[in-house]
Length: 237
Image (tube, rainbow, N blue to C red):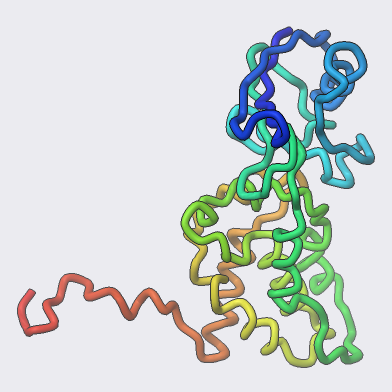
């Protein structure tokens, strides 16, 4: 089976190049990459961890869609690339530090922890959000980063919703305040993040819920101020 990998070596060539390889059939993509590294090219660089779809470290793009390489079964002529919107270190390896920093900027933790009776419904409300494995698939799939590299992003906003909706949070205002700039109103609600999440999390819905919470704290979409809805400010239409 032939697959193509977008290679990059900052020491040898500032430009990426696409190289086609032959791998045995029946392997996961991660197994195929390991096979190539062991038998064909020891310089091939990629990330991996648990090999069980749990740690999220092996996420890459396959034919323009984010996938966990330990779970994905390659097909003939697949194109494998590194995640988008991350500084590229080498081949399929990216620097994830800036993306992880978005978690700190969202202030997504309990600020005024209080005792609360947690019902089964309360648990279910944020159970899926707690399953995020920080694979960065949603970050890579988000088109907002193409125009706004400071956007907080899907997994950070999902984490913000998880804690702002927690019954043990005595005051969610700090979290809501933190997601107004480059946050909930910058999202286009396109749903690309939801489509690629391997854990079944729906960041689009979480962001919608955060918008609702934001209005309860007196915030509104700042983009509305720039819209005239067809009316001429001078009195015409």
